[in-house]
Amino acid sequence: MRRLTVVQLLPALHSGGVERSTLEIAAALVAAGHRAIVVSAGGRLVEPLLASGAEHLTLDIGRKSLWTLRHVRTLRNLLAGTGADIVHARSRLPAWLGLYAVRNLPAATRPHWVTTVHGLNSPSRYSAVMTSGERVICVSNTVREFVLTHYPSVPAERLQVIPRGVDVAQFPRVGRQDRRPRLAVDAQHPALAGDAPLLLLPGRGTRLKGHGHALTLLAGLHAAGVPAKLWMPGTREPGRERYVDELEAQARSLGVADAVLMTPPTSRIAEAYAASDLVLQLSDKPEAFGRTVVESLSVGRPVLGWNHGGVGELLQHLQPSGAVPLGDADALLARALQLLAQPPALPSRIPFTLQAMQRDTLQLYTSLAG
Image (cartoon, rainbow, N blue to C red; front, side, top):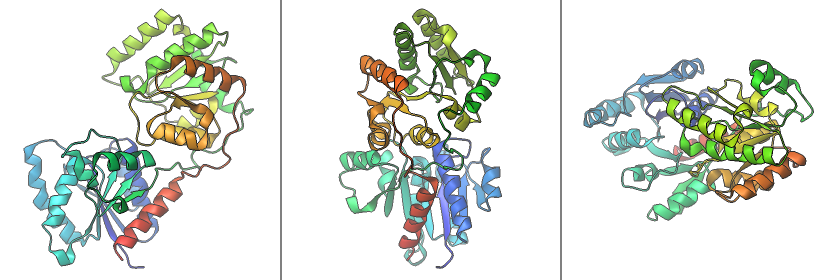
């Protein structure tokens, strides 16, 4: 197998699922003996990218400005100079620039064009560029159906579902009787200490993540005689102060303020899952995949979430008891009581692994390059 040069395009390397997937594929390319190049405006993830043996070229291809179009020529020269075999775009504006750059190269040396639809963006001509690849990677069947519905001109054979995956080494199974993770979390956050069931809702402090549903659920559990506690890591971040104030006011009005803890994101998320009795995924907006579901189940903790989007797809496949109709607060409370009283049997093996995602993506690259 000849050595490939694969160039991935995205706005920046700060944080997030798209950025994480970019680093994971770059590391897999290097490990397989290929050359991995990432083009972005940079960010804190550049250092771990370089540590994996990949290369980074700084180019601000994600800034929404007419001035950004000047980067098309730079990008074209970069692709020609590196002898790129594959160009893989992961975000809309970088994809437009990359598409123009690739099309301006001679046909004989033109790299293959790959795109990934990471999210369920509002259908538009601007978003349609993510379906322009010779191969269009969909991170779930939910995304594939979304593309087929809203972009019917895209041939179905160009779509390939490659789910995002969890690194089971970073999210190892922890027995339910193992109290060490809970004790560690209690030591760090004394407000969570005790024997009460712990609910976990990880996610950014945005209204779409469903924190309000979690607070209503907590109040319902208390009314039913279950003195649960709720931890929501990720809510407290710069710029989210007004939203946190709203949540705190809601918690007070529901009478559960003393049982709720809102913190910045935790760097020990696997331990947070293991310390919990039930993990919540209550995003009002359907998600493309729902990494929280597979991470939690990998650790061995049940999930409760709305039955829509990628979250509903994963729950139906891996833990059907955790899926409830979107917005049905009564069903959510009834299912939470059931799952806490009698934890369900969980899959012993999670099929959505990091290794499977890396393997299938590299196979796509090599098949395109012949």
